Amino acid sequence: MPKHIISGLKYIAAVNLRKQGQTQREIAQALDMDRSTVSHYLNGRNLSWNSIEIAEIVTHFCPKDFLILTHALLNDTERTRTIIQTCTDSKFEGIIRNSCIGCGICVDTCLMKAIVLNDLKAHINDEWCCGCLICMELCQTNSIEIKEVVD
Amino acid sequence: METTEIIDGKNITLERAGEEDRTLIFKNDMCAVCGLCETICPVSAIEANPTGAMIRTEQDMSKIDIDVNKCVLCGMCSSICPFQALDLQINGDSIRELQYPQLIKSAEIDNEECIHCKACETACPQDAIIITRELPSRAELITGEIDIDKDTCIYCGMCEEMCPVDAIDIEHQNPTSDNPVVATDINVSEDICVHCGICKRICPVDAIKQVCRICPYGEYEISVPEINGNSYIDPELCVNCTWCQEICPVDAAKVTKPFEGELTIEQDTCQGCETCVMVCPCNVLSFPKSAKSGLKAEKLHKDERFCIYCGACQKSCPVDAINVKRTQINYTPTKSKAWKKAFESLKQ
Image 1: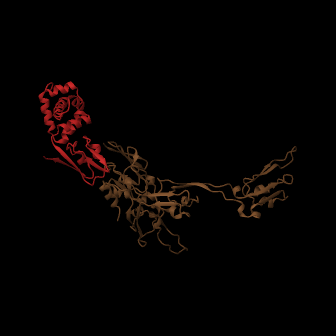
Image 2: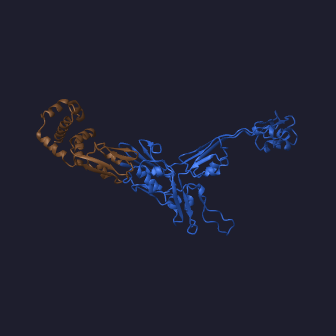
Image 3: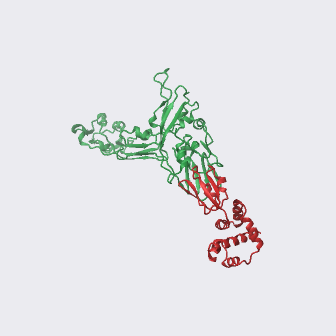
């Protein structure tokens, strides 16, 4: 069953990456799949629609659950980052308050590798922020604010 | 991502592995229990233990406690510690070497100016200074001639016994029937002899001829050799107290203190318990001896020239008789507002 969910997630990610203009080769590399499998997926073959439906539901979990479940299923940070980023519709904006002391706990915890330290302060790359709020929950100086960007 | 704690005797090490490997090292021996780390810690993870107990008695515990569940290894405590007792390392490099705010403090001895008198080495409260010097041999500072007439000499050994520098050596022996003498030879080492003339004067048979050339020709004949040496201040141990600078007779030592401020003592409140005197890492405080028995001396004497305003005395005083006010903290600029605020908060 976990494998079916992963396949479903990879299917959705593959379709989204194709929409973004990536080639089958690039998609295969990004998702760690055979090119032939990517080709089958993009042509709607070799995958049960039920798996895709479940994966769809998973992508609409709250961001933290989506991230943790995906990471647990894949056990691979890089693929997790790709899938979460391509399958998340919402956009987030991270704000670091001046109270940040640059301890780096958020950097260490962020599964999306969206945070870096610069001049003793954390900086969030909104491109990669998935809105899981794990950094905000762990920040000991209460310096992180994550906002969902509404168009 | 979890912080682990390693206790080695009274030293503490906290570690967290992640994007960067962070290690916080506390060296108990270096700590003066000033409490600056406790004050600056943004997550209240540090608690300094009671100074009196730490200083006066053998304690099993460390001078400070670091709560492993609270510490985020940000490094503020290491940056502020004036005694290098705390050190945060990121991927093995001390933040003293990285782009972190640092206390601006220094101490150096100009070896060109230094005359290697060792006053600073003696005065340094932290034994951080080592002065090495190569003194010339005594013979280089004196000139003369000495000769022992071995035929006249009766080998009584008086000269050997009285020579203040052990320059005379007699080959003593027990007389035997085939060699019925008390000694076989007498020699004087010209390198060691200082031409004091004692041997000549004690000799009962006038066997020794000795002249010191300085006396007839005056002092100008001997050029005093240059004294070579080296000075070293251990940066780990130095607390920038300026004792070396103040005691140096030739102004060869230059010290920059990390803090400026004021130290006030309420003589009436002071109970003379001596804890502050024991805790002060800079030997600022002392109890003057009374001039006469039965006469009361000044209670607690301070010399603020040596004070770095770390606040250890104030923290240690059980009756709040000491106040340390920091008016200036010298540190390298930082873009981080949180760090700036933390450093500035230590001023009064």
